[in-house]
Amino acid sequence: MIASVYSKNNCRQYSHNERIIENLKKHLKWNESDRILEIGVGDGKSTTDLLFPIFPKNFREYVGIDISQNTIEYLKSHIKLDKCNFYEMDVCCDRLPEEFENRFDHIFSFHCLHWARYPRKALENIKKMLKSEGQFFGTFLINGICDKLLFKLSQIPRWREHGYGKYISTFFQENSSNDYFEMWKNLFENLGFNLQLAHVDKFVLNFAKEEIADFVIAFLPTLSAVKKEDLKDYTLDVENVAISISEFDENKETYKFHMEAAIFMTS
Image (cartoon, rainbow, N blue to C red; front, side):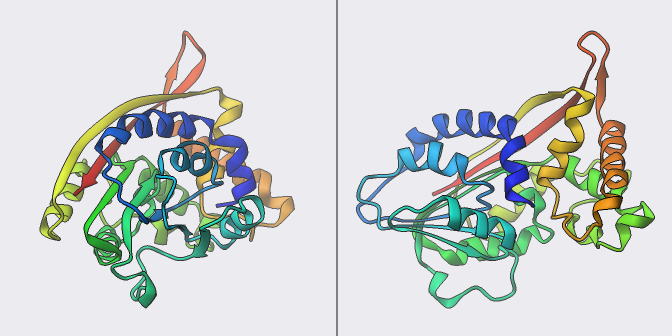
């Protein structure tokens, strides 16, 4: 992900986060000197504008992690706050930094874990990083729309060389209607999480045709390796694939994407 591009195109996700966090506040249990982790920080706008205001004044530290080096560099240059640090890290990594184990009282993740190729490994690591009495809250897409998009792109010859297939979740099967929500829920339960909240939030995103490619590219793993003279062709690929999994609204002349987000909270 290129954070500066994401920052210009994430208003819809920001609005969803705003609604979710407003409803989340009443479920959080804060203590003095809490340590907080966020997985998948993006451009940091939801973090600074929505998440930070609900922290207790005396929280001990905030740590943000993201798989993208570009994102971490962007965050370090744009967010300079006390008790706040950012690290490049994959939540699906085989070995956690030792200092992260049993460290955090609260772990948050907004619109990120649907990119986790190995969902079980992601949750195993979250459980290791969370203190025994800690809380995890996550919201992420579950109708496979990201996997469908990546799968279709990965079938285009010029995209194959960039390895986009590696970002497709192990939950995904072509031409299958796997119930991602139940699969995630079973993972949480099998790993010993105590689920406090577990439900699905359905919503629709509408786009004019000229908005689609920029929005999708903002969330894709970086295209920085693509030559500038080839970028137009890649952008057209994104637009065509995204349109193929959307619904056209003739009245509004917009493209509708039917989204489903899982909301999970553990205690």
